[in-house]
Length: 218
Image (cartoon, rainbow, N blue to C red):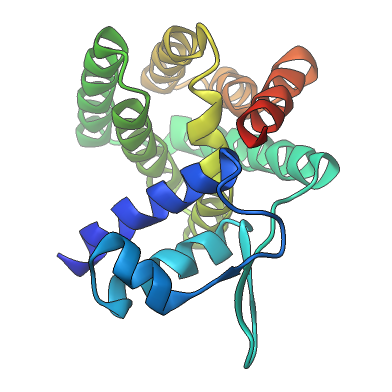
C-alpha cells in the first residue's frame, strides 16, 4: 500500500511542479505534505525520492529536499541519450527476444490502444512503461537494462507530459506497433531505428514540450 500511495503522491507533486504549484528551489516539507495528502511521512519520503531520481528535486544533506527542474539543454541531452540507449536495446532485443516476451508486448499494446480510445494519458503511460521495460529486459544485457531503467525513471515526468500533446498518443501507438513488427521480424537495425525515433524529442516536438512546460507554469 505504501508504494502505491507514494506513486500517487509523486504523480501529484510532478503535476504541481509543472502547473506552477512550486517555484524553483522551494523546499518540500515532509510534515506539511503528509498533512496535505493525509498520509504518514513514509510514502511522502518515497515520493520525494522519486522526484529526486527524476531530477525534479535535489536532496541537500541536513537541509532537505528542494525543487529543481532541468533546463532545456539538459532535458534535450537526456532525451537524446535515452533515444540512443533505447535504440541499442531494440537492436539486441530483435536478436534475442522470446515468443513469450512478444506476447507481453502485444498485451501491453492492447492496453495502450484501450487507453488511447479512452483519452487516458496516464493509463497509456503506465502500459507504455511495461512495454519499454520488456524490451530492456529482452536486450539480454543486465548493465544496459540497469542504465536504461535509470534514465527512464529520470525522464518519466517529461515522457508522461509529452503524451498530452495533441495527437501524440495515437502517434505513439503507431510507433509501438512498428517496433513490435521489427522485433517479431528479427530485424535489428529496423528495431533500433523505430525505438530511437519513438523516444527522440527533436525539433518541433521538443519546442512543443517546452511550450507545454512554460504554459503549465503560468
